[in-house]
Length: 103
Image 1 (cartoon, rainbow, N blue to C red):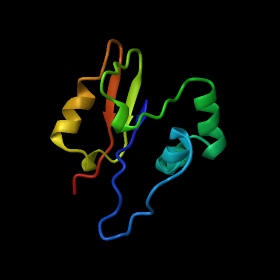
Image 2 (image 1 turned 90 degrees about the horizontal axis):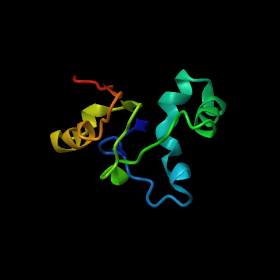
Image 3 (image 1 turned 135 degrees about the horizontal axis):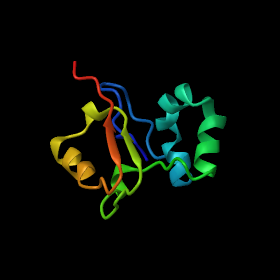
Image 4 (image 1 turned 90 degrees about the vertical axis):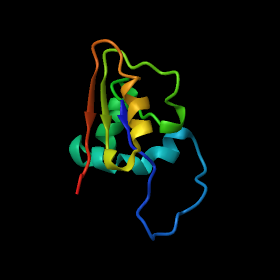
């Protein structure tokens, strides 16, 4: 599972509404993964083989991630309430990794 909060940089105008599917709307959040798993092709391969799922925080309620690695990128941008929500989704045989910059 790959979770990245959709928080933009302060004082930079938002680009507004994004058309398309959920995957197309979340594609911009995948840049850190592109850097690690062989670019867009590597990420597409992981998604198509059901080894990677992008999870928008908006749709996380009610989910339970079993047998999963849950990777939260840019975790410094989540509140303690959202952190508790994510932690409560960690199911059996799963790990939660939080990547953040505390400075």
